[in-house]
Amino acid sequence: MTSITSVEMNYLIFRYLQESGFTHSAFTLGYEAGINKCSIDGSMVPPGALITFVQRGLQYLEMEANLGNVGETDVDEDFLFLQPLDIITKNVHELRHIVKEKKKNLQKEKDREKDKEKVKDDREKDRVKDREKSREKEKEKEREREKDREKEKERDKEKEREREIEQEREAERCRIREKARQEREKEIEKSRERKEKDKDRSKQPEDHSKEMASDQDAKMSSKLERNVPVDISPVSHSQPLEFSSAEVTVLEGHTNEVCTCAWSPAGSVLASGSGDSTARIWTVADGLSRPGADNGPVSVAVLKHVQLRTHEGNKDVTTLDWNGDGTLLATGAYDGQARIWNTNGELKSIFGRHKGPIFTLKWNKKGDYLLTGSCDRTAIVWDVKTEEIKQQFDLHTGAILDVDWRNNGSFATCSDNMIYVCKIGESRPVKTFSGHQSEVNCVKWDPTGSILASCSDDITAKIWSMKHDKYIHDLREHAKAIYTIRWSPTGPGTNNPNQQLLLASASFDATVKLWDVELGKTLCSLNGHKGPVYSVSFSPNSELLATGSMDKTLHIWSLKDRKIIKTYTGTGGIFEVCWNREGNKIAACFANNEVCVLDYRM
Image (cartoon, rainbow, N blue to C red; front, top):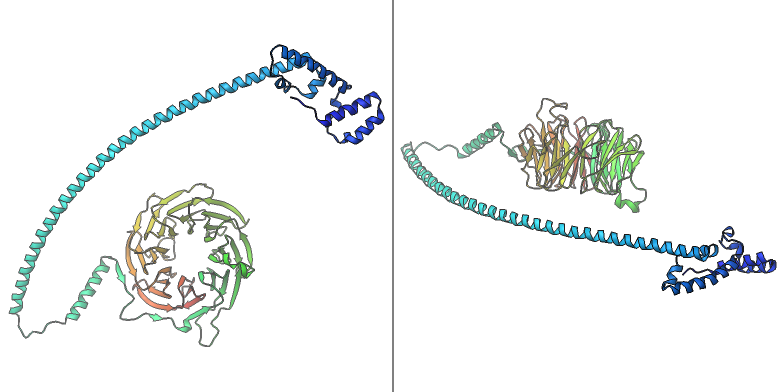
């Protein structure tokens, strides 16, 4: 039932006192009741409202009595349809009409709700019937599939029985052939013995050791002529030379393992990144070191990725890359930020949108975009000039482990067991390569950008073409996970266009293998390390290959002779090796916090 508040009652009494001329009483009540602070709009209250209200009350008593006389029992419910303003401004007949209309509308609303419920129930019954029919159809299909499976099993059993019978027949044929072969060998042996007896007893036998050596040389020559893969052992009559102390420059300064390094394309400037939250730019002196002389760099710039040592834990420098002209260095860190520095070590830009560590980054050839891949499963193309995101690609289901530009506008990314080729401006991959069975560790485009090589923890490397959906070569010779791959700087699009294009793969099985990518075959296996090989690098003229391993050794291989010609043994595992532009220096970064520069002169 409609009720009136104390504030509304005080206001009606205040208005009655004012209208009746009881000014002092009205003032006292208004002051005591705080009439001036109430929210009632006085213009909505007609004159004589209190008297009208009392009169209406009397009329309501009459209305209530009349309603009771006609058998109405929900009187309180009827009064809920009325508002205080209606009670003051309308007579009994108007109020009865309001109650009647509102009850009629309420009944209509109830009827509509009932109709809706009925329709809803009917639809639900229809859905239940449809689901029952679908289940029956699915059961029928399942019964048909079960019958097909049973038939397939019977066919498989029949084929297996046929194979077993054929195997037994083949085994019997093999036994017959073996017996005949043994009989022939016996006859040949008897004939040889008879001939030996007829020879002059005084003749001395030939030197068997020379004969064996001759046979081995003949076999090796035959293999090489037929392009059969051969294992190359570091053991030879001429042992590989060790780098002398005069040929080694040790760059000290990092306080944690050095996991990445790269020569600037502009000259004798080397960048290194470490777990000590710094990258360093070393200007390396030209020429050989001299005993007693300062073998260190001319200068070093320390690129700090954190100011307070207490926060170094999440600022490990994980990757770095020079732009094409060697004027800018990009670094990626465990804090998810990419940074760009000039050659003086001044910080130029910070790109911070990733939500996890950056594992890989690359400049495009033009130098206007930087591509980053992160543990947050996304790759981002950054506009270096505007320092804004050009495009973010969220495609993978695992951390992105490597990226590589195909040209200035498209690139490949790898993660989990998938490889995507993406193009700036396209939201979906322009090509998807699926075939690896485990994490893909590395992707590299060949010098022309026409084929892509990949390697994985599934012990395989694969060659892909943009013209095919499936790999064109599946390279299976390693015994453990393949960590990295590199193309030789040969063939079309390089400075050595007339030489054969090769692919080198480095594996945790302690070997490096060279592949003929046109045929998809191994050319040779370089077996000189005793621990996992983390890095390989071709010399600029493609005559030499540098390899670095966790066995603490760096080997220089002659690709012509396919043997180790020089070696260096450090005091820590090697994470990366790289040649400078001139091809006369090799840099290596070690787990024992050192960076070494080896001077190599032909």
